[in-house]
Length: 123
Image (cartoon, rainbow, N blue to C red; front, side, top):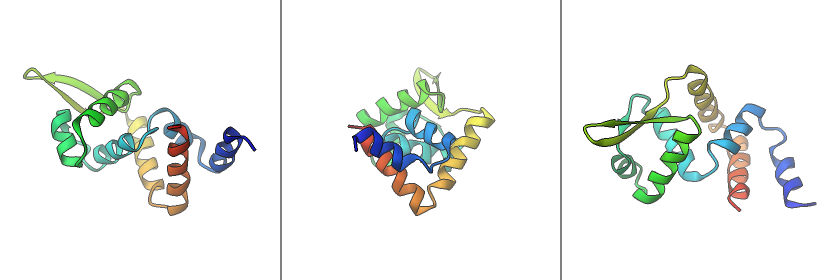
C-alpha cells in the first residue's frame, strides 16, 4: 500500500467538507492552533506578535501561518495605526465550517484522524 493510499484510507470517513478544510486550510498544527484561537476569540483583532504571545508560540511560525490563513480565506488582515492586525473573516459559511471543525475535534476518533492527516500532509 502506498503512502497516498494509506492517507486516503485514514481520511475516507471524515466529512468531505472537513477533510477539504484540513487539506486546504488547517494543514499544519500552528494553523490548527490559530483556527482554535480565533474560534474561541471570534472578536479578536490583533498583531502577529500578540497572537504568538497569547498562544505561547514563536513569532516567525505564527506570522507565516497567519499569512497562509489570510490567503486561504479564514482570516483577514488590516492595517490599523501602521500595524498589521489579523481577525476572523465575517463570512458565515467560513465561520460555520470553522465551528464544525472545532466541534468535530471534540471527538477523539476524528482528532486522531485529523492529526494523522496533518502529519502525513507535512511530509
